[in-house]
Length: 100
Image (cartoon, rainbow, N blue to C red; front, side, top):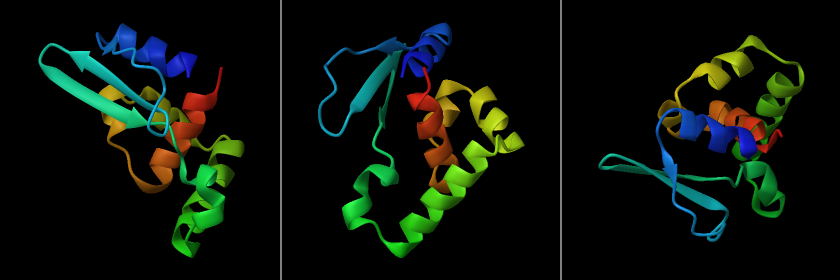
């Protein structure tokens, strides 16, 4: 999480420290724009995970652990673009967020 906070700050986003509540949601503001990200990957919800979600998690885990080039591409996206990712790319982004 430290990496994602540092990246957001470098790009001019201010973290709205509200404590990690509501599923670890973090919110940021820059000028008149506000964005948020919930650090709650599907892998945290294994008890209620659908087969489709499981496939996404497994694919993301394989790409991330294999250091696939997609990982560095996701790391190099702007913070705002990272927060808009979906599917496998989002799961990889959330794994990157957990790095410290």
